[in-house]
Length: 272
Image (cartoon, rainbow, N blue to C red):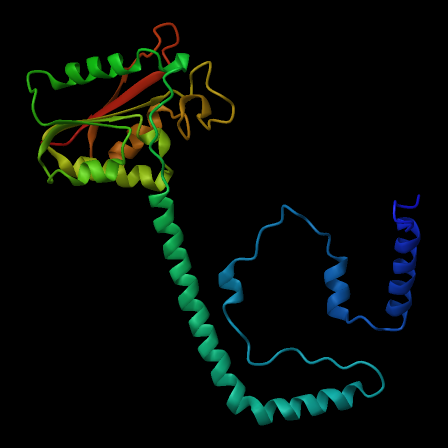
């Protein structure tokens, strides 16, 4: 079928295929190109890591085709040896520069991963979050006991900045309200360790999250409904708390909507 401008796509494709076949038969394409063309293309294939491209070789594989191929290779080798004193130092310097840049890029990626963590408030319209603020306040009062001072509640802000405002060993209790579900695994370990260092001996740390074992938890625990990154299991938070040196981890219920009971909190304390 011809297009609007009168061109016939099928005929164009046929001419191109014929020309490629003619050139291939005449040896116009190198072996390396043919090997790459024979590899199936995948849009989902893994991207080449920059580290694998950082090293620049001072010499590459020689190839010679046709009757004069051996002569061409011999000449190329001779020229390579004559220029090695000039080319090799350049490739070494370029490889060192590439290694340094790659390292800086990786460090920048790690910094951006921390900077780009978002802390928006949880959507109030979600039925899974109804009554959550009141439930959290009740949990904090229960954990405070008779000590009504030195308790920090972290919610809807950057937890690293909030915790950094307090000196080590200065708090009797810390409540991380919806913080851990919005963190990656590495960030989670860092924040809990930072919080544990701010506790007095015997002080408590509580962190709540939507329960991954809840009947309404999605198969893909991305937490879109709750405005979080993921739903968590109590055992996961308990392990993170133990990794930070906290002990006596236990789970308490933090019910938002009473009929749904989607939220829980893990409480652990700093050894005396």
